Amino acid sequence: MDFGTKLRLLREEEGDTQARLAEKLKVAQSTVAQWEAGMRRPSAEAVVAVARCFDTSADFLLGLVDERLRLVPYYKDLSESEQTFMQAYAQLSADRKNAVGEIVRLFLEGEA
Image 1 (cartoon, rainbow, N blue to C red):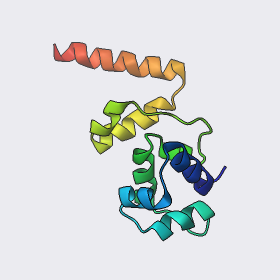
Image 2 (image 1 turned 180 degrees about the vertical axis):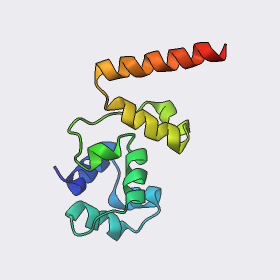
Image 3 (image 1 turned 180 degrees about the horizontal axis):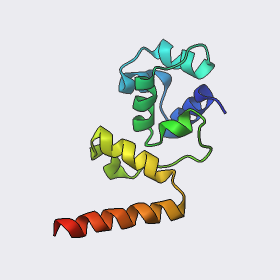
Image 4 (image 1 turned 45 degrees about the horizontal axis):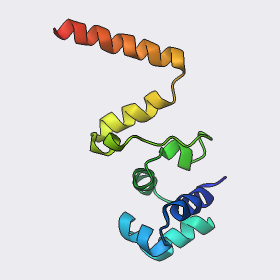
């Protein structure tokens, strides 16, 4: 499924019109229509804005992963670098997530 199709499905799932989504993203309604129709590709900044708008990952929107990750509500309150870390962490295997957890635990113990 391409970006435009995913965008349309997410927009419709949220009950938004193209005009309303365009307003949220601060772009023209015709831009959203062109993205959905595959006539125009969004910039990297636009992909990030769409991902944030729908609480999902840019990787999902771009077809790099098939599973849609719903980001937890506090995610929007994180800095950009924290958000980038969380997106990368979410894609790790369980073993690697455990390894990261162990590293964080060791760092926290070192600060005590």
